[in-house]
Structures are given as structure tokens and as C-alpha cells.
Image (cartoon, rainbow, N blue to C red; front, side, top):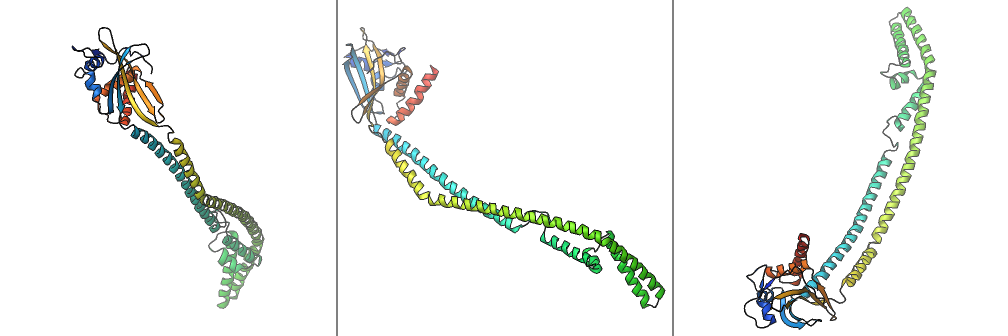
Length: 363
């Protein structure tokens, strides 16, 4: 065990009037931080100590040393709590890994549902576009118009395809049919001259219609060709889109199937890994006892001075390790001894760590 002087002294002792041995001298000295306590009262009545021992020993330089030992309460609980916390942390990590796996399954299920919807939408819109011109209905209508033009079906041209239209062909067809109607009306009333006049108008309008039909046929043929080529292109796009969607859907379904099928084995591997880590986290040589040690020497005039403070840790295999307090740690220990509210080693280490750090940054 290392010996050192804590300078400046955390605890300054004042010698009482009577003396009946070095231990008694130290015990009867008062604490500078709280003079209402003697060392014996403060150190000897700690809630955190399972037992307290005072002794007088000699160090390796022949000095007489007054030594105080506090054997802490519930060291086993402290060790178990560390192991339990480690196990909980490991178990939580394993749970997070499993949750992530299940979340991945959910994401893949959603991907499959989305692909199925995309495939359904594509199938319900064969043109794959919102362009209402490139539709089977539009192509059929234009084909019928072209057939009527080629057959010179003037009635169909007027009533079916060009009704309410103001293009030249519609106007000419309308005038032709109007002239025929007027000629029939005049003939029915016996007015041969006027009937003949309207028949001449009808003949001229029919000639005008015949002149207009070829250009109309050419225009309609060009429009029909463009629509048919557009429909063919859109059909190819749709087939390509459907093929791609089907491939992606199959890939997503296969990935989901493999993920679901591998869940049991994956979870088993996570559980095995957790067990291995828990076994590894178990201390092979846990703490058995922890004592807090303080030592004093008496000067020639009987004034006690603290020369050591620290802890002594005994493990299950009887190995002993000492931890020497720094000045800030020694100050923290004295403050906690005066405070005396910790009842277990776990509580004491928590308070000690916070207070020693505070003392360190303030000094």
C-alpha cells in the first residue's frame, strides 16, 4: 500500500486534552470541516460501513500508524447491479436488433403492396398517358370518318362526323344537301323552274364537295397514321413498364419471402450472441469486500496528521488491490463521512464520483 502525505491536509486535527494511546488521540481529535464531530464520532458511526476497525501498525519505515478501516455494506449488491445493468444493456441491444429485422420485414411488405398497386394502375391505363387523343375510341372514330370520306357518304360526313362544324367540307356538304332539299320542295309544289335552279346549285356544291374530299382524306389519313404510331409506341412503353413492374414485384416478393423464412434462424443467432456476451460479461473474479482506509501518524508533540486515504478491494480469489485517493478524492471522502447519508456501497460510489469530480474542477 502506497503511503503519501495529502498536502494541504484535507482534515486538520486538533489534539484534545487527554491521551490514552495513539488510537484514542486520533479518535478524540476534531474535524476542521465540522468541529462538532470528533474523528471517532464521524468515522466510527457511518451508515455505509458494515464494520469499522481501528488498529495501530508500523509502516515499512518504522513509523507507528493509526489505521482506520470501514468495510462497506452490500458490495455483492453493487457487483450484481453492475452485472444486471450490463445484461439489461445487452438484452436491449438484442431487442433493438430484432426490432430492426421486423421493421425491415414490414418495409418489404409495404414495398410489395406498393408494387402491386403500381402494376394495377399501369394495367388499368393501357395508354400509360393522360393524352385523350391517343385512345382506341379516338382511333376508331377517325377510321370511320376516313371510311365515310373514301365512300363519299355525304350524309354520314355531315350528320356523324362534321355536325356543328364550320370547316369548308362541312359547309359544302351542308349547302349541297340543302340545295337538294330545296329542289325537291320546289318540284313537289310544281315549280319546275325553281326546282331546276336548286338542282344546279346542288350539282355545283357536289362538285365542291368532291374537290374537298381528297385533301380531307389526306389530312385524316395523316392524323390516323400519327395516332396509330402513337398508340403503338405507348403500347410498347406499357409492355416495358409492366415487364419492369412485374420483375420488381417478383424481386420484392422473393426478398420478403427470404426475410420471413430467415427470421427464426436470425433471432436464434441473436439470442446465442446475447447469451455469449452475457457469459463473457460475468466477472470471473468479482469483488468480495471493499474497505475504505485512512491512516494517521502522530508527531513528537502528539499532533495527528493524515498520511494516507484510499480503498482496498479484495476479490473472490483473495487478491487484494489498493486504490490511493488523490487530494480531491480524499476531500470528497471526508465530506461524505460528515454527510453520512449513503447506506450502501453503490450509493457511496455514486456520491463519491460526483463529489470528487466537483472538488477536482473547483480546485
